[in-house]
Length: 169
Image 1 (tube, rainbow, N blue to C red):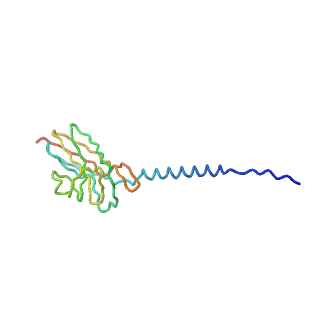
Image 2 (cartoon, rainbow, N blue to C red):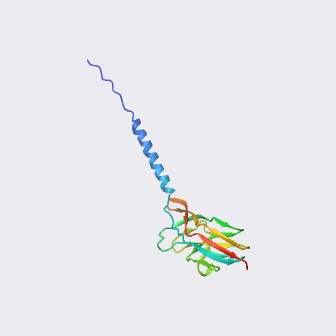
Image 3 (cartoon, rainbow, N blue to C red):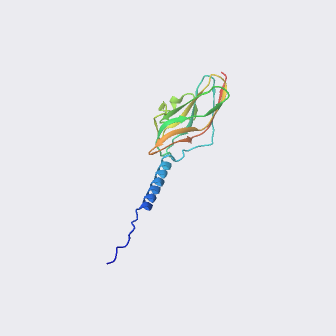
């Protein structure tokens, strides 16, 4: 009689390693996708405004036109301002309207609300209220919107920069 041949079984370690590598690549791709939403529209055109000290001025810096076919769930709006004295800049969400520069936003906006936790869709715009009790020159960078869109989220620049001249009364 002949003796049985020695048989070595493969344990599938190579398959396991390939499976782990593929799963890691898919997870990395998913994380990248979730954290990289499409850029928001920006413009290099500066919004220019002037007002008297103590009188707020409202600037429309980003409008969701009809071509803007996205709905963003805002977590906040970041504003970076450089000025030669104390200047207050407050972002608002203008519902159902948009404006360029005004001291009376109610004439152009259906509603002016705090953008945190709100949705931003076509017909809405981001408005900045700028004021100071002293003469000032304020340079305002493009706003940065913190948002979620479907499964994606991010904080991206949007709209136009602004320059505000606040003059003595």
